[in-house]
Image (tube, rainbow, N blue to C red; front, side):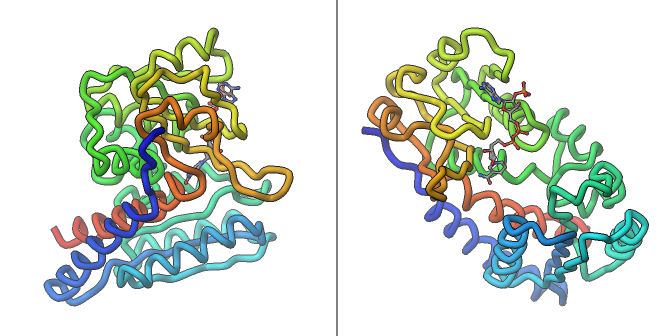
Length: 283
Ligand code: NDP
């Protein structure tokens, strides 16, 4: 049976470190790292994320501002708010909760956020910097996966790493981070032929497709490390990953559960990026 990678415990340990660093930073500089979170409309899942982000800010001792805008907010109003936050010295990180209501252009907002305050690492400048391996901010979910691997003592160098999913926020940056860590990386997607066969080659398998319990034991090599990024709701309302835990865990050497694996790491990495942004602002 696989070792369970405890994302809650690892996340708590990293948050404690961030809190300590924040106290030192505040003493040295006379101000705290500040995060602004913008949410437009009333999507219940987004509201939960935003609440959790505020709570995380309190936990690590950050200053935070939340902007809850009505669903009918115009692009111009949103742009004006981003411009104000770009110029606000108390704010080091700006996060606009996605998805936005359909009449708003997500790309326009991403481009408008100052890359130095882009703690989601979605701005093309930061995406490009990740590509060349010269980055300050790491995209939160893939960075969370890397921290889980590192803190579980899992070697990446020279390993066959298979990432399933090629989105801009998870799959692609995940593959790049594993490559920077000297993994031999394969990226799979919905058009991949013989997916099960490719997955069986993996020493480290990262599942990020958004399909409940899709990856079964027969798709995994004996002793593989299996990281489940997926977050899916079952018909009964329960949260489940992309990996069928029951059949995969007996074959894997390490596995992340859902919930309690990658999930808790994402907000923790956002806190880390905000602290980094604050540090860069005084350099
Ligand atoms: P997207 O929907 O943007 O991307 C899904 C990717 O999976 C696409 O590249 C798609 O391929 C690929 N895919 C879909 N079906 C298959 C299939 N049957 N076989 C192979 N590949 C397939 O999702 P995200 O990347 O945003 O998210 C992925 C999952 O991770 C979701 O469950 C999401 O909820 C979760 N997530 C979790 C986070 C966390 O904090 N734990 C944070 C962010 C996301 P193609 O490109 O060809 O369409």
